[in-house]
Length: 537
Image 1 (cartoon, one colour):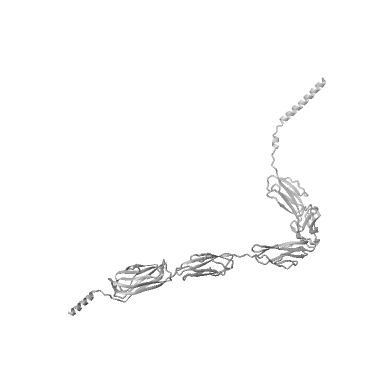
Image 2 (cartoon, rainbow, N blue to C red):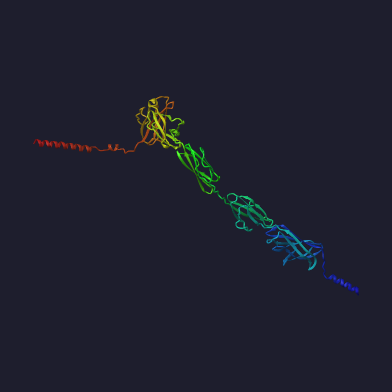
């Protein structure tokens, strides 16, 4: 009897389902390099001993600091997450297999690491638990997307400051300083890297300077911060001199910033004033060569600082020596454009002109721009002509230079004549002694001229016989081998267009006038006869 009960109990035990616990595991596999649009995807892999059959897996899943977690079905499993409880179901599986993927939104992730954890994992076969795992987790290093500055400051710039005050979200700042350099210190948030030209000790040019700091997050995203630094240069107000001098004497008193009037005594008619400013950026006017009158001469040397402030120095130079005739001299002399070589001790010069020259153009300039008066250079006659060049200086002191103009006599050039001059179409009354003629043309632009010299060794040159018009002058130059010459001139006039009245005169009918004359004569004869009859009676 007892044996029967024992068999019965054994049969009941076989019919009642019981838990079979096998060694199992769950692996969470995440690839932190595969984050797209702030979504991290991880695989759930079941590692269960062969022979264990299951068709459902359950467990609690969480991801620290993540916004949300969702499940993506695999080929054999379908799952869902509700209140962080993950349920995955399948028809039937044995051993290790990929259960599916989970998607984790990390857009609001603050920490640099993400812990993904699945706990209280159980494997079921037809609602019968066949295995369990206490927990499975994966810690993922997530590349930070933070690309902002944690701090930004400027130093070593004479108490300059950022405008506006630093805010990580603001990317544009301005700084104003009068320093020649500035130090910019920046620190990145998280593990972002810094680059660009806007860090460290930076030299500044005058005006606006542009710098930038590039912040690159671990994920590769960049943000640019720009700092515009304006260097305001304070312009110097220094308008003082460190040197004031003249080339031919000493000034008194010794140069000082508190003294603006100085004196000097010289004997010369000119002086060179030199001055050097204390500041290289200051400008000076009133220096250079100056002409001195006898007695006191005042000159102003004006120094203008970089900021525009001016200061005037007065230099009183007294010329001691009174001017004499020896102090007057010509600096330059030219006759008809030809420069005459001057000698300091020579006041008499000669110049030769040809017999046809009646006037010479003389240009003369005296030292110190003294007045120069020229007489006698016009209406030249054959032989010597004396031209006077008078220099008048201070106190009406004068000095006279003379230029003897030797004009050649025509008799010396009797051979330099034409023996004949012919103008085709014009009856020219030519005489070798007559050097000037006038021809009235119609509308010719050129005349056919034949000129024959009195000597076959003479050269005849024709100038101005083209594009003729009223007022043209044709020159015929006769020259010998020694350079002597004689010039014949032909003045050209255009024929005035007048009305031809000759034909009108030839067309006048003179018969009426003749008849009137005859009747007049007969009338007079009749009157005379009548008077005789009356007398005879």
